[in-house]
Amino acid sequence: MSTKCDSEAHCLRSFDFPEGGWECSTCSNYNFKGRKQCYRCKKDFSQNDMQGKPKHMLMQDEEKAALKASKILARKQRNFKRNKQRE
Image 1 (tube, rainbow, N blue to C red):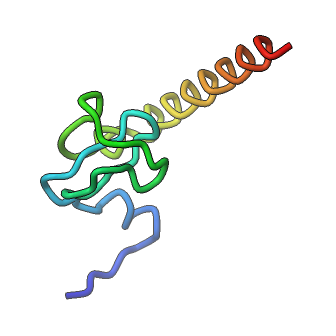
Image 2: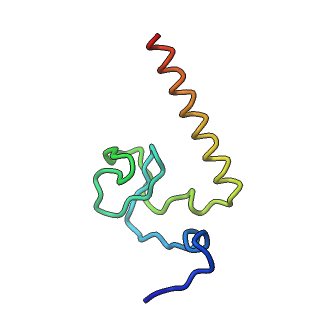
């Protein structure tokens, strides 16, 4: 059965993730039931990964933007520290 969406963004927001999957604690990708490794970043499934539907997909746009910005900042800080240690 095909459904018609007003826009691609609307389709993404209205997607109903199937039960039984897990959200990667590293990259926040939703992985379907049965995956032992994250589809996006290839990290093995661990106890740190959240079972169930991804919370970030249920957030308002402003909350998602703030979460993304904080993750980008944290990544930049980690990279800066690694580069400093190599010097």
